[in-house]
View (cartoon, rainbow, N blue to C red):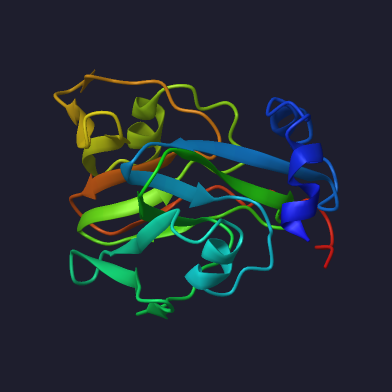
Length: 210
């Protein structure tokens, strides 16, 4: 079904997400993640009824990607599902999940669906953690705002698919190398101690539509 509606959704401006921050959860939209051949850091901000990483992969042609991974903060390592004709190591995903996917060709990955009834929050452990800028936080324009709010971070990084490397901002009393972010942006952060973010009361969009 998602494949059939994708061409129509491409006509919708991504800016609509900021405009509907307070709208009911039955508003349909998308966030686009341009992927290059190689590793790409993406997120799943919309409510898509995905339960498994393989559900995400099914929405793309066979051969688009060969690995999907999530960062496990407890073990400080990537946990991967590998395409062996089936997805060996398939793992659970939900709204707000962040993944690293290895693309075999350039394509656009999409998170398509309704706005989540409750925006994502992240329980960070000491060490590296993946998170996403929630859809109700269009007020965040720079990564340092995330660091200031969480208060326990010393590094905030974004993945640069063009160079296949992390670009980092470091806390030196100010955020050296600070970079722009927007809603839906996936980040990897290094926490010096556990924290939950966002800490303010979650913004809700009403009853979730299924």
